[in-house]
Figure 1 (tube, rainbow, N blue to C red):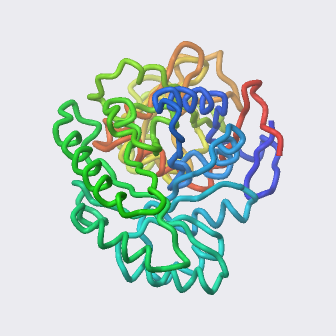
Figure 2 (tube, helix red, strand yellow):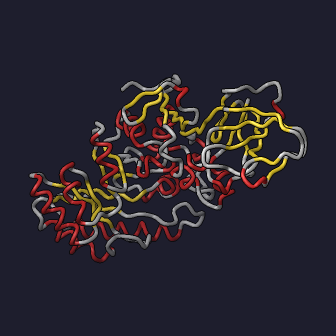
Length: 393
């Protein structure tokens, strides 16, 4: 196995702490989402470094699996992938300021638009680039963020149509509450979006694609699937929310495992203070392992003394404060069975035991998205195929 990062290769020993991506699980999750989409195109969301998983290896795997379009938030994210050789359509879901128009046009990205200023700037940039640019009109049906009102859609489409350098490829919207058990608000959004699109598309020579469904809607709201779907968190094997009724959510498999190795072992007597502040003191003679991972890697300090780490398939308590680069783990239960260099699992499975990111999120009072996107860039993402080896270039 070799680590691949920014085009350079290192032997495994260089990186004791890694985020391991199981591409076979990614493929299985994608297959499930395609089944739910019923033949409609699946445009995976890989914004924020593929939800912390590593945008480049994920993008390469998705394109190899036949995904023709990938969804990101910002032009810079898409540019990094395009310049790394990823060949796909890139849909930019967060409306950009006019200043980004030249970058968008030079690469032929497909931006979401919801202001006339952005439309005009993109049209000028497309003319300078000598190309016709596809755009997606963003309609706010209840999210409350960027987007035009449904009743503004016909006039906005007409303004876009007046720009010869632009083509409206899609009309899009987004759900704020599709992951809830009560879907009444989401169903009202679907009706509003469908009605707005029906009225607006009557005057279009080429009807734009309608897309609205995120992961939660793909499982729970069949009427939201329209002409294409944009799943995110489910692609990475996590449930979009705890209240979804669909039993098929259980078929998802987490793609990422966060692993490290035992860097030091020490026997300490009872009453020994550990880590900064000595918030924790041993109550018995203990064997303590040092692991080379800390809040500088994205392991939140607020988790200090609240989590377990898998060593030898055994959940071992993390003790003392999480520091920037290291944590301490009580491995007394493994005395005589643990050695320098042994693998340790922060998130994922080892033997019969598993630690889920949802458990960390609950402890932090947040959601798995935030935990995963918080894994720092200095943690290399190592992609493995079904055979447990890095995929080919």
